[in-house]
Structure formats: C-alpha cells, structure tokens
Amino acid sequence: MIIFDSFAHAYEGLYTDKAPVINAARSFVLRHDRKAKECVLCIHGYAGYPGELVSPAQALYDEGYDVFVPRLPGMGTSGRDFMNTTRFDWMIFITKIIERIKKDYNRINILAHSMGCLIAVISSFDDYIGKLVLAMPAFSIPSLDRDALRQALKTGRDFPVQWHSDPRYHLHYENAPCDDALLGKEYYSHMYPAQLLEMEALRCNAVRQFAFLEKPALVLASESDAVVSYSWIEQYPDVAEIRWIKDATHYVFYDINPRCEAEAISASIEFFRW
Image (cartoon, rainbow, N blue to C red; front, top):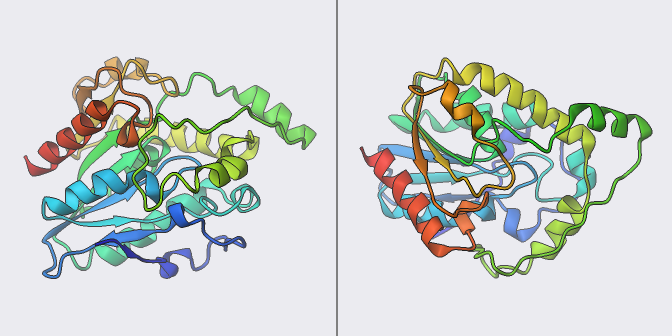
C-alpha cells in the first residue's frame, strides 16, 4: 500500500514551495510491516514527479525492498516554485533523505530517471549506496543550447513551448491521468531557461564523476529516445552495464509500449537481485 509522506525534514533550509502539491506529485513510501534489509530510493527527473515512478516502485516493493519516492523541491507544485529552485536544492534534498534512511537499512540502492540519474551518480559516493539503475540518463542532451538559454535568460521573457497530453502513455498513479493537464500547464508548456542551465551544470558535474563510478550500475537506454543521446556510452565501456530496450521512449516507466516498460522493470529487478 502506498503511504504518502511529505519528507518534511528534507525540505528544511531549502526553498519552501508556495503552491500546494499536485496529487500525482505527492512523495510516497512503500514499506513492509517487517522492515526490509535493503531499500531503493527512486529519483525522478527534470520537472518530473513521483507519480511517474509508481510502476517500478511497486514492482521493487513486491520483490521485498522498502521503497522511497520523494518529490524534488519546486517540482509538482507550480512553475513559479520551479523557477525559485536550483540544483543545490535538488541535490541537498536527496543528500538529506539518504542521511535519514541509511540509519535503518544495510544498503540503499537507487533507481533514477533522466536528470535524476545525474543526482544519483553524484550521490553514489556515499558508502551506504549500493547499486544504481540509471534509466535514460541525461548525460547528453542534444537540444540543450547553453548560449541560447543564457540569451533567453537575459531577456527575462517567458518562451512558451508547444505541449499537449499524449494519451498513449500508460500513467500508473492514482486517478491517472487527471493531473497530466495541470502539470503540463505549469511545467511542460514553458522553457524555464534558468532551470535548464541548472540542469546543465548538474550534468557536467555528473559526467565528470561518472568516469570514477565504483558502484555497480545498470544503464537503461534506447535508440528511440528523442530526449537524450547515448553517444557518450563508448567513452565508458567498463563503468556500467548497458541494457538496450528496443523501441522504448524516454519515459520508459510508463511507456507507450507496455513491453518496453515491463522490460525496463524486469531488468532493474534482476540487476538489484544479482
């Protein structure tokens, strides 16, 4: 059963969201009556939300893990909140959660998606971190033009982005997809150059640290991913295991193709179990 948990302690000292949390974005925990020896911390991506990770979280819980799925500051509330956060809010938030839950488990594994993978890699040097599953990691983003973003930031203008809900995706959170339009209005319909530049700084840091990664890591990748590129993989042949998922989109954990979603979850479970 999903227990909604605000993770209030982790927000202390960071930016405080002003808008209420959208239902789909509520942080949640899946915890067994008899505490598991290991847990999995799930980290969502840029402008993402915990509801995107319901499917892998439930599968990992069924495998015997306790699972924590927190909401990064500024995400899942409003665009105004998002604009007031930085990469330091996102990173420190996850660090504080790791510090809290590592007291109760022998090991913390991490399953992350997209930008969440950058945070996962940077956080992985904590001794309590075990294995990493990095789903569609944002190590290379071809469409991200730093010079154009800096110029847009100078103008102070809001650049709208064409966005519409795509019913082909299989969202799994409670009452889905009722919150999709609201999330789209607040997040996906705007460019947010300052936040994209924050992610770019996070990406540069994570890419440098990935070369020195010593924890077992599985990268879930797809040649059909329209958001990130995988040209970097050849540079790190021995750092992580790569699992290519044919025809998967970037949003593999609620993919248009249920086979891709099932394959990604199965690969994650096998990797953690191994």
